View 1 (cartoon, rainbow over the protein chains, first blue to last red):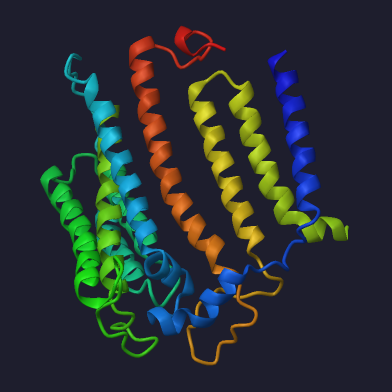
View 2 (view 1 turned 90 degrees about the vertical axis):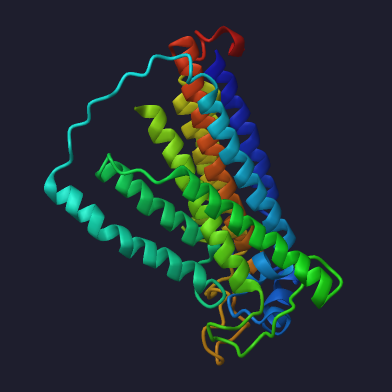
Length: 231
Length: 119
């Protein structure tokens, strides 16, 4: 009964979507604001990756909100998992140790993946990628170590300090821009430099490095909480 | 055939969204419901990217000075999806942690047996 109703609902939604989308042909639309960003993004922000200039230049304040949402979700996950943990008996699970190949392999790959993540977020204004992607790559390195060599753990205080300091860097950079550079939060107060060089685009690399470290440590904290719960 | 070629991304994106919605509506296992939410999330991201696509377009990155700006795809949906992916991961992790707590409390993930969630 319920599945019949669900299928009817899906058919209705699908018909509505087809009706609406038939007036938007695929592969030909472009919004005015997108064209503006492409035409003047380099002059306005100094970043050659236009997506970065939208995310950290024009809409940096929204990105601060997004980082806040991620932070709240990580905190909420920790709180939910910690809520009922103390009244359970702690039974130590016995893990079979990983084989030598797995153990050595993941220890060998770990710094390389960290380096790649750092590359992705440091070059966020020049190449595809940025703080969120680089942070996710860093968290995936930690996930690999957690799955490959189960005894290794990150220190919680280290992760928390990285997260707080990088969040503070983001906010302080924005406030400095408000005080020194212009009339709005997160306005650029550093020289924009020449296009396509590492030290260009003003505050964008600083903010993206802060976002990369913050997202990396937050996602690592999420992984750490979930793995701890499974033991 | 040309209809399929012209609209394959829309079809795929809304196929994913509708499959996810069907899973959320029909399945009784909480883990499967969360997987359905995640599939819906993926479909919505794909749809947003497909909206901004320009035929024969390139990525909106001026990697060298002689890159033409005429054929660049719309950067706004890409920036939105960048946001949506990160939020999606956070929501997924939060939902899974709630599922863990529910399992510890009720001893089951079957939504029919969890009385407070019955519909």
